[in-house]
Image (tube, rainbow, N blue to C red; front, top):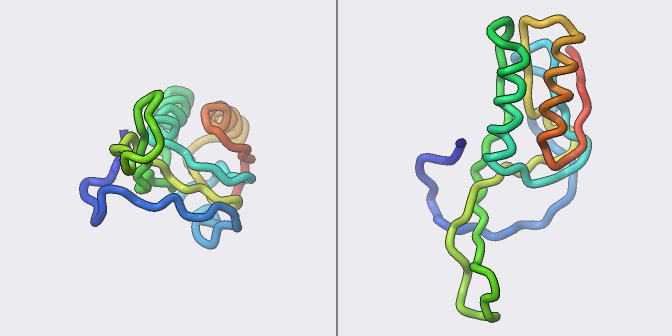
Length: 134
């Protein structure tokens, strides 16, 4: 699974949600892409699941780029924990995805195959996404 090798701080604030993406707005590497239409935190497990679906579908015929990286740490307490007692321990990492972000790109496929592969990957993600082409 994806995670940063090293971070400056172990735990991070939640930050405010909302707004539109200002980077990763256009297809840079491939011919087809999967673009987020809603905002969400996408965990490293969900990214890996989507990557596996795309890789399995395109086999060795195309190339895949993952444009998002989970670098935000999320903490968690155990169940039935009383209030107080500080911030929980590190649980997993997420990528903050805003509307307009290109999440995955593929190259070397015909449009139907790319649309099907990226559509299957979109079902694995907790947000709405659409297929786009260059």
